Image (cartoon, rainbow, N blue to C red; front, side, top):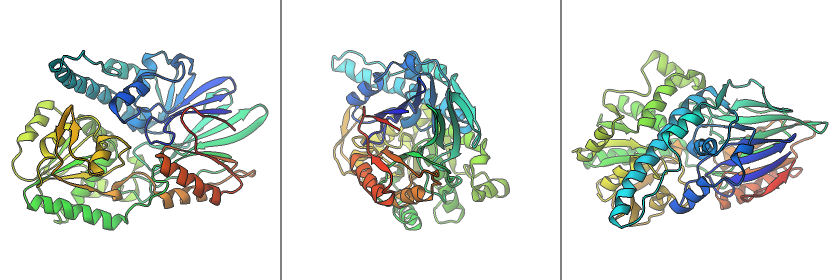
Length: 467
C-alpha cells in the first residue's frame, strides 16, 4: 500500500491523504486548507489528483480542516461514498452547507470592497448546492463495526474523544498475500473531556499515522487554566466590557456553554447575557442532543437528572443575520461566542471588527489557531490586523485558555502511542502528520526514542511512502 501525503503535512490544516491499495484509490480526509487567503484559495481550488479517479473516501471527523473540501471534490467529479460515523454524518451535512454559506456571504462583502477599488469580483470555492450534493454521498457507520469499503480493505471507526462523532480510523488490509492493520489516529482527544468519552485503545497495530498538533507542547493544568479564564471573564464583566470568544461551532462552543452554565449555576459568574452567534453552532448543539452515545457518564447524568447542559435562562442562540447585527449595539457587559475558532471566516469577524479596538473588552481564544490565520496573528500580538479587508488596532485584552483544547498535548500523545496494542510483529512504521513543522519534527524525534524498532517519518506535502 502506498500513501500520498497531500495535506496537513508539517502544518495543521487541509488534512488529505491518498491511499493506493489493490489497484484502488482511497481518499482519507478532504479538509480545507486555512491560511493566507490567496494561498489557501489556490490550494483548495486545485487538487493534486483527478477527483474523478477516487474510488471511495473516509472521514475521521467533521471539523472543516478535515471535511471542508468535499463539496469541491464532488463538484470536480468524485462520485464515490464517504464513510464516517453517524454523528459525523449529521454534523458534516450542516457544517459543509454552513461553510458554503459563509463563503458566499464573505465573497459578497469583499466584492463590495473590491468594486469600490475597481477590482473584478471573486467567486466562492463552492456553493450551498455543491455542499448539498456532497452530503448525499456520506454513508454512516456505527463505532466498532468493521465494514468493507474497497477490495481487501475494511474500515472500523473507534472513538477518538476529540469531538462529537470523532474517530480513529482502523484499516484492516489484505494485499498481495499479506494482512496488516493501518491506524490513522484522526485528531486525538485529551481524555477526561467535560462532554465526551475518552479515546478507546486500538489493538494489533502494524502501521500508525498520528497527529501532532501539540507534539512538542504541554497544555496548562486544566483547573488552573480554566480558573484563570473565568477570572479574566469575571474581570471583563466587572469593568463593563464584552467577552468575545472565537470558538469552533462544533465541540468547543458546546464545551464553553457547558462551562459557563456550571460557573453561573455555582454563582462564580454573574448571569450576564450570553449569545451563541452562529447558525452552525445552533444546529450543532441540537445534533449534540441527538447523540448521547458520545457523552461521558458525568454529562449524561447532568442531562438526564439536572438540566440541559447546553441551555440556560440568560443564553440566546442567534440564527438570523439581522439579529447578529443587532449585537453590535449591545450596551453593558455580555459574552459573545461565535465561529470560526481561528477567526478566519464567519460572524466572528464582524464581532472582532466591532470590539477589538476597545480596551475594556476581552478576546478569549479557546482552541488551536493555525499559522498565518487571523487568530494566530492576534495571539502573536500583531497590531493592527486586517479584518474583512480593513485595518484595525488591537486594544482589547487577548487571552488563551488551553484547558478547553480538544487536542491531546505532547504527554497525552505519547501516552496514546504507548498504550496502543501492537501486532505480534510490532509497530513497524509511524507517520507524523497534522502539526506545524516544529511540533511534528519534535514529536517525531520523541517517537524514535519511544519506539526504536519503528521507522518514523514526518512527511512533506506531496511525499509518497509505502508500507
